[in-house]
Length: 428
Image (cartoon, rainbow, N blue to C red; front, side, top):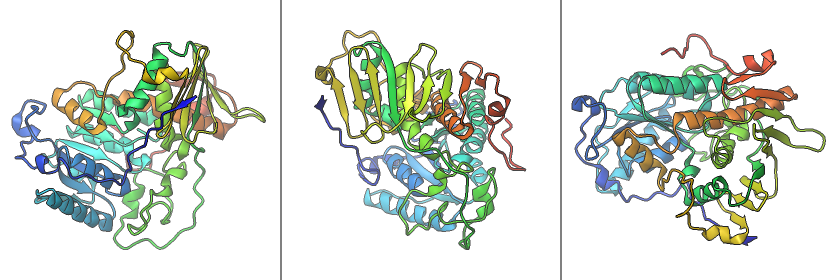
């Protein structure tokens, strides 16, 4: 198989190009009174969750729009966010003057000068953040995985639709040419009928088992927990800013969904895109056996496995006429000439985006769907959750993607809902 390695862009890379151009006069949507921004208007953003990923997204979006607010339950991170934004804008010859800081995201949502919000909180917060943002009339960029449970995800989609918000999910691989090329090859039959898909994305979550530690003075731990199961503070969940790592809350089922969802939200997403299942999903999932990996089955007979197959976190499409391996560092096809295939005569053309962040901002201006809508984000997250439930329950599960319910399994059906701590609610 011929190799055509694609070097991924570092998440730490910070290019100031475009920041200066973002410093124009702000005209809030509520002043315009038209329900959306004209292309010439400046989109104003608030960031909910200013940790490692929130900072990365803020610096990216600051090149394209205007960051005017940030929110975090840890004052130290919030102060660092302010400093980072001031330095970024200053370096670009602009200014972060007027940047507002909030401890409670609901106060940020009450700021009428904010057009849209970036949600980079732990998974257990996504549903309430998205629903409340939709109710407040804000457009939404929500990090992946979209939700923390199947039922939450459907409620999020319904809220976004009810309040007519533009919502994009952070499944940013869809905005890369190599992933789109791979999926378009699959969708147009260039490797024949797809019989099998292999997905590698890491293990499922585990039950929380960390010992209590002394909570930092400026961290509102009860608000960090919010709607999730309460446990005492441990720095693995919220590391100090001096420790430049992605926090490990994602490894515990009470707050995240393991690597099956953290990276699975990327890799299962590409599998769904390639299979044409953005509005659906598999019809069953079987836990791993003695000599078999966890296996999904789709209604057309295609099987998808969750397993390590020697390519790192990646997706392999296996068809009757060829094979495609795709990851952030690998793009290989068999036959090799599929790498350079031109799609001018192909029937299926996938949504083209070469910039995930601009795609969302353009969608806000035009009010047209973006490349990874709430529905797509929810369907991808659901695949991840189905895997986790099969791992946990250790039995085959039959799933109806139309009704989004399990067939003849009351226990699994109850587990679609996740957990909601009093007094938090998801009403809209």
